[in-house]
Image (cartoon, rainbow, N blue to C red):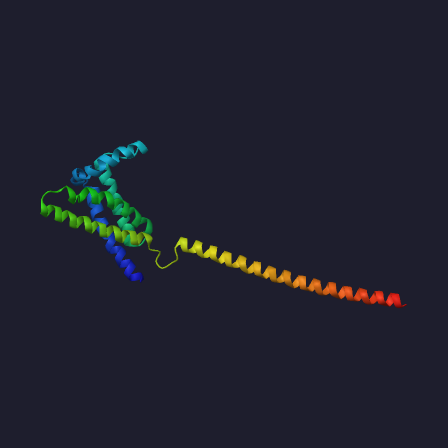
Length: 194
């Protein structure tokens, strides 16, 4: 499965490297399309921290750098889960800004943008799979559940062993008490007879 994963990640990451480098090196060609999203996101970023970029050109460049970097990490197999997550987050505004098929009146343009929108939705699905892929290793959630189950089993086993040991000790104490009463009874008989 390793060669298939490596090939799939390389193929998935390559598109983001190419489009990210293109957007980062020449953001002006995407600014008009991006304003549909950046006009809403930019002011919110400015309210979060004034140092964050809020103009369309800077946001397009930043998104392009995120896509190029994330694509490169994904394609080379380094930090694949975080890289896929970053790519998934960066793909959503790119798709909304670049392929708003619902705004076009011309049926041909609407169809073309709908196809690209659905293609990006498919890429998003692949990125979500890559972000969730643990390469066959158990996930953190599984390991926590397993440790909790093992802990419960160990606790139950120790409790059973403790009950068994207590029962054995109680039976032994009961035997010793009966034996002690018999011995005491015999001694009493001997004292009375003498």
